[in-house]
Amino acid sequence: MKDERVTFFRKALEGLIESLEATVRVTGWSGDEAVPAPLKESASRLVDRLGTADRLASSTFTGSSADIARVKDMCVAMRRLDAAYVSYRQHLEADGGTASITLGAELEEVKADIRRLS
Image 1 (cartoon, rainbow, N blue to C red):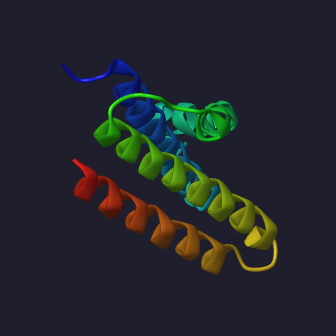
Image 2 (image 1 turned 45 degrees about the vertical axis):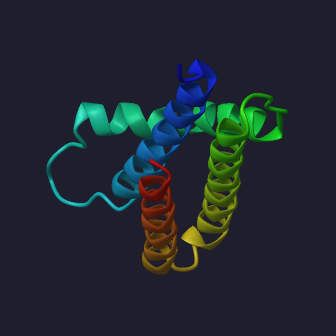
């Protein structure tokens, strides 16, 4: 039976990825059309999701060795995304295009890593 806590970690990571992608899209939004409500909603949840990811990544997980390894990998991914977001925010004013590309690349790498974990 799969540990539900592992599923919670995965959903938290997936939510963080979703909000980071939405934030990049909303920040770079141009044109006359309004930002779609679901995109805006996802971006608005970023701070909460970053906080959840930070708490989870800082916690101690006990379980089967396979689950521990999966959770450890997800925590590493959460920390990578947190650091990438901090870098994005630091460079956004100076060069928003490069900052968005860099964060987008990190998001794609993490998503590829997650697919390998499945």
